[in-house]
Length: 457
Ligand SMILES: Cc1cc2nc3c(=O)[nH]c(=O)nc-3n(C[C@H](O)[C@H](O)[C@H](O)COP(=O)(O)OP(=O)(O)OC[C@H]3O[C@@H](n4cnc5c(N)ncnc54)[C@H](O)[C@@H]3O)c2cc1C
Image 1 (cartoon, rainbow, N blue to C red):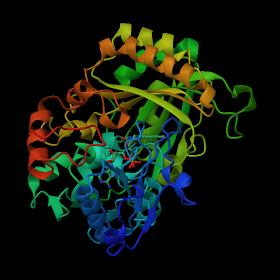
Image 2 (cartoon, rainbow, N blue to C red):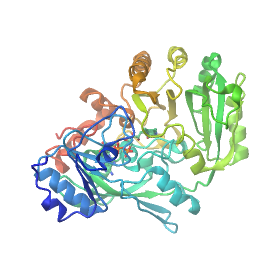
Image 3 (spheres, rainbow, N blue to C red):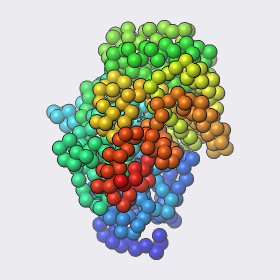
Image 4 (spheres, rainbow, N blue to C red):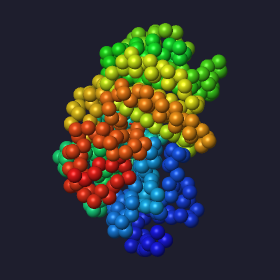
């Protein structure tokens, strides 16, 4: 790379160009998952769409493997690469709220916390995920599953358009009216089609929510999970919460006698008015004998950032996931068995609801093809210590292997590591062929291939 001439890029580029040997190289190349340790040849930290166009041209003309970094959160480290170019959007953080139109324009390098901060004073929220430090770019392009899915759909169901730079350096808009084939593909197809410089979202009227945890001892798992699977599919869309196995963190917000205890539980986040949400959640919260039931009204950004402190950047993460249609008695038994073996304080398993508004969009309406699944299941082994990487990985794989036979077959691309082409195809099912045709049209040379890759048809 040192033999490469950066002069043509410098003349077009306003942001930072960072190479091995530069003082900021080691911090700039780090991604959220410390299990990923890649050494790009060049990090192009863009400040605007013109920089992105220049970087794409440079990468293409120099035949560089090119990765796009939004928030850098991807489990498999798909926001970076070895020996290639990273188009880093982390300085593109503008958020513009139009309170009259109820829309939110978000630049490609924003994290969800940036969006929550900007929208909350207007009484709006864009449906996002379950933590505020995740990048808007990767989360949105994969679909976007979160606290507001049952009420307002996936993040992509609230996406009105994107501005993006294609592999040939052209800047285009994709929306229902302009380049609709591309707009279909970016709603679930990941970073396969170009660099999104900005997203235009519909904001939803969310200010405060009825939220918080209910935890049960592990010996009540089967009873709780069986009650949960019936309960959640019947409650109104304004009620949501994910089921989890977790270890109660030793922090002052939890009673000291519960610290470090492994539990199963619900993390609630309901948009229904508090009295309605209280009534609707009661049947599940009354199952068995909860250890802790601490639910109340709070600002949406507070719920969104509750886990930020527990999961700072720099931990080891190993991910496995699947979509799930049914939670059979056998699957519940397997969950109880493996959930009880959480290998570290940070390791967890979550079941996220996809029904409600998420189900009112068809399997082929967007590239996200598992609208008929009821849950996205994610198992993550997490630990601060690299010496424990093998232990958390083993637990995660064994848990996944035990549950995979009960799954719908494929996984949410944003919860996958690099798991091979078969798993990518399983994630898109019948939509894969159409995605491959769109890929051929907009990126025939597969320039953007550091992702859950769709091969050009
Ligand atoms: C702690 C944690 C919590 C999470 N919670 C949720 C959740 O609640 N809901 C959920 O749906 N997902 C969740 N995820 C998964 C998350 O959606 C993915 O990790 C996602 O890839 C992160 O996006 P990013 O921009 O931060 O990632 P990056 O690593 O920067 O990029 C990931 C992929 O997206 C592409 N990409 C990113 N930005 C752009 C862009 N602007 N234009 C084109 N391509 C781009 C990249 O090419 C790459 O392939 C979570 C992840 C973590 C680590």
